[in-house]
Image (cartoon, rainbow, N blue to C red; front, side, top):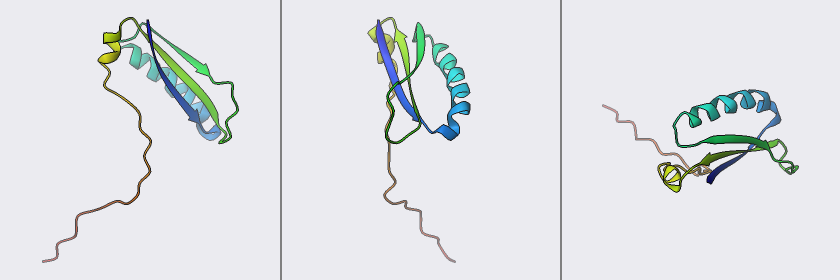
Length: 89
């Protein structure tokens, strides 16, 4: 068995809505057939940044099922945005 873990910190103001959403999302992920089960857990460590931290652990039967998931999470900070210059006629 293999575990694919996703950990996320949720702001208190969005917590209730997120908790409803994530449960539906977990069902959608399970529907892909790549996982045999999932577990939603609350991380019992108080974060300095506040909020509530959860971990979702998806269990896959084989490594091949995990390898089919070409996905990863990245946090980005925008340094600068560029737009095409307006062309005046």
